[in-house]
Image 1 (cartoon, rainbow, N blue to C red):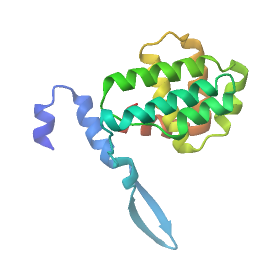
Image 2 (cartoon, helix red, strand yellow):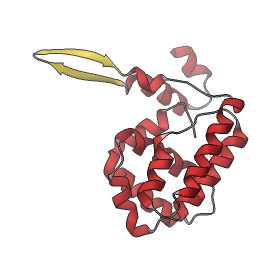
Image 3 (spheres, rainbow, N blue to C red):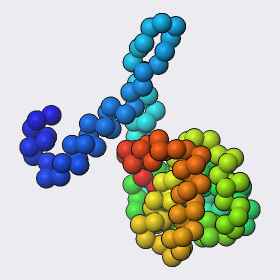
Length: 169
């Protein structure tokens, strides 16, 4: 711990290291006893290779194009089955497909579409919103409306889970 703190050029890395192991720990109540529950699912690091991910990404892009305009279908298509891969070219093509699909949704339909999502789906969609905010052609105002709707549904815990998740979209 001390060695990492002295070697790390950024103190924020220490903060992230500490909280990436502390935040998944939740105290759960069982009758009068408290016990420590470790949520292992956050550390599932299953990444697909480019060859494995390519057909899944192609299928996903097709479903996104097919659901264009219908807010509920677009949101479910984006959030239900994320493909985690280390291939940057596939990630970029997926980002473009998600960007096009989100741009077809009318702003008035955003809250209703987000309301149908589970917590895990909110987290996945939040990952895409952050990725799109980093650089895209969609107006930031629209992305911030998506972000506000996702925050209303998932709370600040969603942001924490997204920022600490090692899997990126």
